[in-house]
Image (cartoon, rainbow, N blue to C red):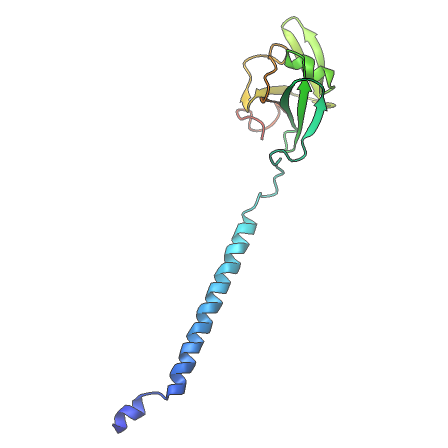
Length: 163
């Protein structure tokens, strides 16, 4: 009996150990929460500017057909408009709203300026629903709900659509 009493710690020590373990577990859980939050914040958008759906969309034009028009500046900045029109072809709708400018050639309309920006070198690439278009802007029919976009050809990712 004497040996058992000498080996066994007093009851208050067991209680203190239990409380210490509980406090350590609590602190561990809290530190995990802070580390997780820090990782989520640091894995954000890496400084890239992106356009949130329907955020900052400019409504322009008059008509019964509405489509989305976007201008990508090549640096990840996108300006977007919801264009209302009754024009059958896209070039006419964009010209009527002063969103593009250019020259009519024998093969179609050559876009030189998009929303007041003219490229010093390169040309404007034309996209329909994030894919390079198979037709020019003057031959593209306006379709309600579609997204039409221009992006400069001098961007590094020439194979992909607007960002």
